[in-house]
Every structure is written in C-alpha cells, then in structure tokens.
Length: 505
Ligand code: HEM
Image (cartoon, rainbow, N blue to C red; front, side):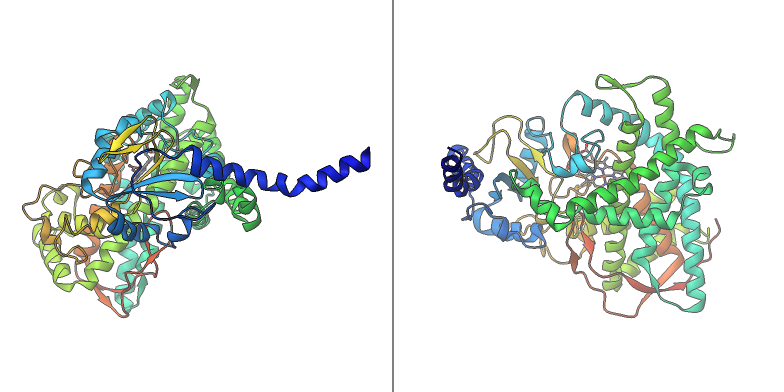
C-alpha cells in the first residue's frame, strides 16, 4: 500500500509542479481576457510583455505606443496593465474616471515598506485613505504650514551657499548632485524632526545614507508583483526581500527614536513646531483615521511617505534644471539676468521675489516636460469597468500614466526633444494638475498633496544658486538617465561655482 501510494505521487509530481503554471496560463490567457481591450503587443507565456520593458520602461513603452497607439495593454507577467501616452487619455484616467481608478494595486512594497498601507502613496482607496489624505493636506502640507517652514529652508540654504562660496574661493569643483540631495534631506529632516532631535544624536550623514539606499531598493522591480504564485521565491533568491527588510528596519528605527525623543523632551518657546509635534498633538487629541485612533505606527507610516516622496523628487528636479542650464548657456544667461535684475544688490532672493521670476518658472516647466521626476506615475488600479478612448478597462486592471512620453509627444509639442523654455510664453499650461500635457505632480485624487512644499523648495533654491554664482563646466554634462522609480541623471553633476554676489542672509 505504501509503495503504491509512493508510485502514484512520483508520477503525479511533475504535474503537481506544473499545476500553478497551468493555472496562471488559463487565468491570464483564457479566462480574464476582456472583450475590447486596448491593443497589446505580442507576448510570451508567463513573462507577458515583461521582456520588452528594458531598464527604462517609460522609453520602451513610448516606443510601443508609437506602433500601437496612445492606449496600450501590456502584460507584466500575468498582470494586465494599461498604459496611456497622450494628454487626452491621461485626462480620461486622472479626471473623467478618477473615481473609478483611484485605488493602488496591492504591491509587495506596500506590505514590506509602507506599513501595509497605513501611509498615503501606496494605500488603497477607502475611508482610511481619505482620512489620512485629509490630515496630511490640512495639517502637514497646507500653504500655512509650508510658509512656517520658510525660515528653516533659508537657514539650510545659507549653509550650502557658504560652502559653495568656499569652493568658489579655492576654485574647486563641487558635486552639485550630492549637495542638492543633502540640502533637501537636511531641510526635510528639520521640518520633520526639528532641531532638538538633530542636535541630540541623529547622524545626518547616516540618515541620508539609509534614505538613499531606501530609494534604490524601492525602485527595484519585485518578481512577486508580476508572478503572484512563485515570484516571492525569486525575490528571496535575488536578495531583494532581505535588502528591503534591512532598509525598512533602518528607517523605522530612526522614526521610533525620533518619536520617543519628542515625547521625552519638552520644547523651548523659541523652538518651532515640527511635523512629529503636529502628529503627536493629533494623537493626544484622539483624532481618528478610519475607525482607529492614531498610533505610533500610523505616524511612522506618514513619515515614511514624507521622506520617500519628498526628498528625491525635489532634488532631482533641481539637478536636471542645473544640468540643462549649463548645457544651454543662452538660457542660463537669460535666467541669471532676470534674477539679478529683479533682486538687485539685496544679497539674497526672497520668497516675495519668486512670483516675479517669470522666465524661471518657464525653465522649470521645460525641465519637467523633458525630465518628469516620476516618468510613470505610481500605478492606479481600476475599481469598476469603464472605457478609455472607447476601449474597455476591467476592474483589477493596473493603470499607468506615462508622463515622460506625454512631455515628448510630437503631436503636443514642437521640437519635443529640444530644451526651449520660451515655448511657455503666452501658454496657459501649468503644473498643478489641470494641464494634462504637463503632469510633474500627477493629478486628481492621487495627485501630489505637497506640491506647495516641493515648488517652494525648487524655486527658492534654484533662484538663490543662480543669483549668487556663475557655473563653470569642466567636463561633458551627460543627460543619460539611471533606472529607478524616479528619473535620476546617471552621472553626478560636477561644476565649479564662481562667486558673483555675496550672501546677505
Ligand atoms: C518637486 C517636488 C515634488 C514632485 C515633482 C512630486 C511629484 C509627485 C508625483 C508625480 C506623485 C504621484 C502622483 C500620482 O500618482 O498621480 C506624488 C505623490 C505624492 N507626493 Fe509628491 N512630489 C514632490 C514633492 C513632495 C513633497 C515635498 C512631499 C512631502 C513632504 C510629497 C509627498 C507626496 C505623497 C505623500 C504622495 C502620494 C499621494 C497619494 O498617493 O495620495 N511630494 N508626488
């Protein structure tokens, strides 16, 4: 009896092993195929169209859309995904059908990095999400709150200007890419942790190191998200799972210490309220998110979003802008003339000056058009059935907006690959999510809730760097992109600052 049953099981073994694959095949190709889907390039069993994406998916998808049209279906493994590539189709997704696709897919990173959906960016739509978003918009990222952090930004920037002045005096080259990311991280740390925590033992350099590592790890593709049955095994073998776990634990430990520290220490009168103070106050007032009161875990999840979503996006915007400016001396000169004429001999650009720097706003728009910080917006997922451009979109479909492709769409822009800020003269294209040809902050219910903070950082910093210094190029400035969730330049920007106007702040 035992021998017989052993024989049966060895005969069945190969079939048992094949069963999950067959199930995926049936589910993918036979059962779930919608009737009128957007066109899909030929795909492979199991991999789907995955092999066609390459290391810079926004570019490969744009190339596919040139052949198949502005709305395409691609299968990432077994996951049906629709990608849109034109302002009209982006508007259908982000405005017309916003409420039907404003949830996020359940990604492995949500669970392992974003506290299982307790934050904002990777959280599924529902009462809980609506409450966290409301809390963030009203309490953390409001215009009033953003204005209250202006002095912090100015103080942090004065350090950067001083250090650049030293480099200018000695004629030495600086790694501007690194300086910019350190500056934004430093400012964000002070906005979140406040000065007392920074003074009491947090190691700024170490924090930046683990944040950089977190962004690298988050940008990595997880097999579990496209091969639901056995992808997790691949992630284990490749080491992705353990590097995510380590990176998460490193950041989480910082947040725990910061929260404990805030509870223990009483603030002096002069110390400004930081974001942890705000969140702890709401906790003590027994504010509810969904049906639960705010716990420390909710606070840590919100902090994760602030650091992951806020630092990289602002820093890379400034990095790309400076790279394009040194590659286009005409634009650089025109912009510096605008800033220096407006500001005169004041010795600093103030926030009040920013409104009048019209050409600078065009330069930033042009940078975002060519180098969208989030070249493909964070994925959405269809909640109910609707149509895009007449094609059926079924519940459960993942939806991506390729903002990089829209920015270079020749039907929308003349000379789409050229850097020409003047294209925005007399144009009503703006950046806050109502012009679907330019979407640096996304749009709709999932659009960036902190654009005031991001825009202030970018404009104030760039204006000051261009007011105080001229910039000498000593090596070719590459605009090659690095792979990742956000669009980094591949090589650091090395420039020599030349001191022109001394700092008076
Ligand atoms: C120039 C700077 C910034 C840019 C270009 C930017 C861009 C974006 C983009 C493209 C999205 C995704 C929108 C979508 O999926 O439709 C997003 C979401 C988000 N951003 Fe920003 N962002 C910036 C600054 C910030 C800052 C400073 C913070 C926080 C302090 C922040 C927090 C968030 C959060 C929490 C989300 C997720 C929103 C949600 O899913 O509900 N961002 N941002």
